[in-house]
Amino acid sequence: MTRYAVYALPGALGDGDDPAAVRLRDLVEAWYARASFGHLTADARRYGFHGTLKAPFRLAAGRSEADLRVAADVFAAAHPPVLLPRLSVAELGRFRALLPDGDQTGIQALADDAVRSFDEFRAAPDADDLQRRRPEELPSRQRELFEQWGYPFVFDEFRFHLTLTDPIPPAQQSAVDAALAVHFAEAPQDVQLHSIALFVEPSRGAPFRVLSVHPLTHPQENV
Image (tube, rainbow, N blue to C red):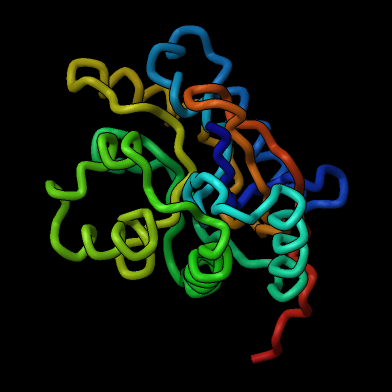
């Protein structure tokens, strides 16, 4: 069953994008390609370089891929680029990811609006979703969010991140952390996000791929 997702994709516009974002994307994709840690990046590579805004979903009845692309155009045109401040490699449970630090108002607002705006396209969770998320085992707030929005890590439970690894066994954490520190030593920290992207998973378990890129073109408000 095909699934779609709405992701933040730094560097998606290539030469027309923030050079720091392009550099960061190149660094992350080079990290995914490292054979020595391939067994610890399999899922990260399958999903691709991204930050989740609207988690993967099946299309609701009566909705089409073309409808979704139009909605993404409208959404992106209504939002300005946002800053991802002071990105650095950090622990996220047993994962490692690039996390921002400092004022995250912009990316939080973008994610919150994406959750609401694209929810009309989301079909209700199926048996696979319920098996994977096990809502009965979630904390009460995350269970409430999952039941209403199909994903537990939204709004007050949201934490923007760019995933670098799968869960790392404790015995390998030191080696992975050392390799990440070297690989990302010269990585840009302040990155402008100039677009969102629709990703598609053609069948359950297949690699996600970029379906379309939608520039954030609304003028920045002067404060």
